[in-house]
Length: 184
Image 1 (cartoon, rainbow, N blue to C red):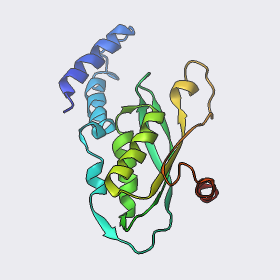
Image 2 (image 1 turned 30 degrees about the vertical axis):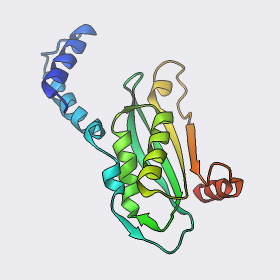
Image 3 (image 1 turned 120 degrees about the vertical axis):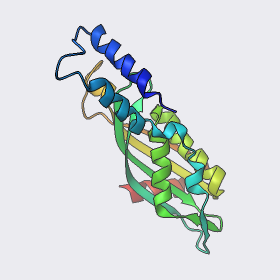
Image 4 (image 1 turned 180 degrees about the vertical axis):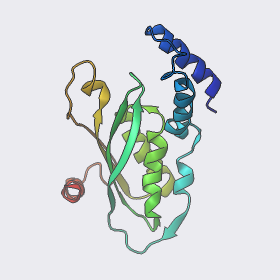
């Protein structure tokens, strides 16, 4: 899906555009390195997160399942600078659960796309609702955005927090409070 040759050409033009010599020793291989990096950073573009959530297991316990501190790295679609942080996911099963690594894999699929945090949070929650059909899901993401740290307002250490509630989490303050208690 990723056209590495086009990326190499674009990086070369970019280097020339900022006044660099794209052929100098330190930069000669940079277009190739960046195109290879893009294949990794944007691997989620060709993936369906639902594939990771397809294999489920019967569960009699329908109490909250929470996976916290899922580290992720993504790229802001507005400035193409990284944002990174932790995702926390809770869901209330309705007779079936998914393997614990699958929640982290779902986060990775959406993080590996040019993305905004608000959209990523909703996409993760919506995919879990669609594929697991739980009674409810809550996703919270805490991230630092390099577009705020190294350019523009230049405020390192600022954390952006987004959360989305679906199903039973939407109107149940007790469930929300339990979620917040467990992630702290």
